[in-house]
Length: 114
Figure 1 (tube, rainbow, N blue to C red):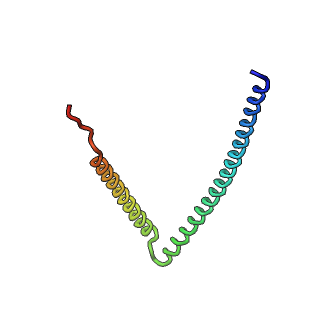
Figure 2 (figure 1 turned 90 degrees about the vertical axis):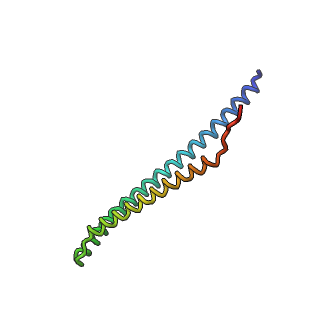
Figure 3 (figure 1 turned 120 degrees about the horizontal axis):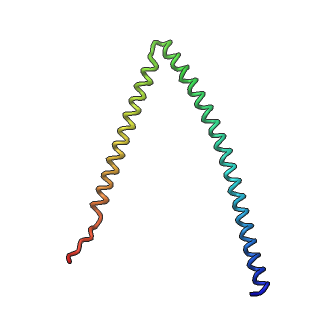
């Protein structure tokens, strides 16, 4: 093996290493960007949660002034939401079961007489 061949192989390895290094740098930049976006999103969600808590307290105070039991309304809404979620879960389970049955029924069986 000649010296020229070895130099070519080393140059090829060097080029691939440089390309991989550039890719790693790009990935690091993307990860840094994603981390920054995640931090911004977290701050936004925290701020919105705080505002929602303030709005809820305000609405409950207004409801109380009007002689309306706000806590009872919230409890009823939570029950309705839970029932709706349970119905959707039941429908999804039933749909999955019927799809599974339909797929099993349509598959050919491999029975051969010997």
